[in-house]
Length: 269
Length: 286
Image (tube, rainbow over all chains, first blue to last red; front, side, top):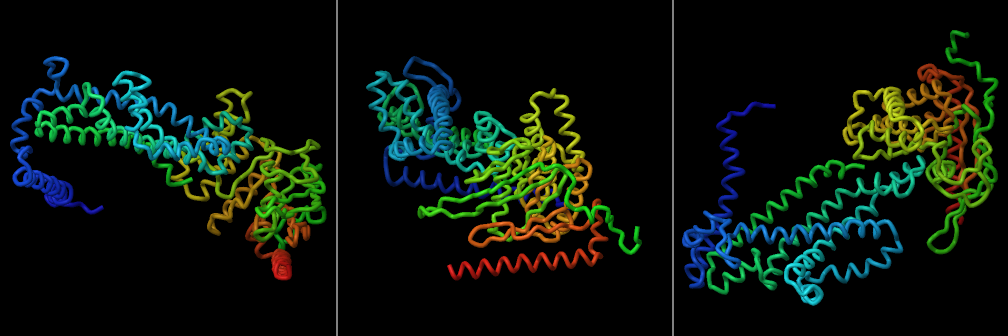
């Protein structure tokens, strides 16, 4: 490899990885500023918003009463709901995906149901959940549970049914029992697909929790958005948007890292 | 020995192997159900005996049913009629006594070389201690000269290396019969020649009975004691059985200079071409 001058290297980094994203954010801020200045009186410009959010930013974990806690706590509440719902959904979705992927009969029975329920916005399940649980928090978790099902079920089933036939032939000639084939061959072979499903599920769950919390109320980043809008406090709404975005990105990066460990053997078989 | 002819000719006169019958195929029939409800008959009454310590090549062009035959012996494909027996025991499902080497290697990509072989050894030799199984795996990795790659994943190996893992995995469980389904078909000619020599070496060391499916006439001539040439007309059948007049061990260079090698090769190629043309004509008429 040719040695490169450190200054050249630094310039390259600046030109390729620092300046272009900054330009993008600058455009976004310009649009924000334009909207605030000319299109509505309710919205603060970026600098005003930053000033008004000082308290939230400096002290994200304050508690001044049940209805007034820092944005850090709100975020943790929302994350908790998402992670519980996602975990429950995953526990159901992976075995269910295996069943559909391994058995044609199971596929014929369940796939039409999955196909019809999959396009339904998970928020539509909220009234059903409220009727059953009578409580906001379990209902929100239930909606996230439903959200986390479909992408994982469909991707797991696809992964399981696309395990190369030769892998099974190997298992058969060494007389490996069926249950062991599922653990030792089908599961590792379909892990890349399963992770793709999990990644999509978690991404959608994070989208959906905001909408659900707007409807259910209680403590959470979603209700915070709606509550602050009702107080016509758009500075907080803008802050929440940034926080939701950064958290979603962090979740995606985390699960992407886990997925990356299995990617290597996705390409070849 | 005649210096003009450096090939070991001990077995020439006595080429029908002296071993006892290992695998017996009697009146074998196989047909597939087609999508339109009709059935397509591949074999109808095939007989074949393979003897212990024999190296048999099954030769034929694509569509001649040679892979189907091998897969039926492996138990991976059901038979429609007749029977296959191994040492007198009927064969109707896959088993560790008949290990298969697959054309596209069939290695599990998330396991290392060691892991792939260990998986098979663990499953087949449950009664041995972990230590014994470990040493069996190591011994077979050494046998195919892959010690340095033992911890590598299949994705990091060349095609030839992958197939050596496939061969080591198959031999590690000590099968009665080694079945090879075009094992070298995806390799370049040079790698192929080297692997042929390695397989022959293993054949000598272990007195392993081998059935090799191939479409490469030279490969069959270099390696096998007997070549079963399949001919596919409406159904596939054994067109001719060629006895290979060369003894073991074989020297590739010496074979290349042997006039009998050339005449056998040409004879076999002619035969295959004739079968192929006949089939095309039948297909046109039908």
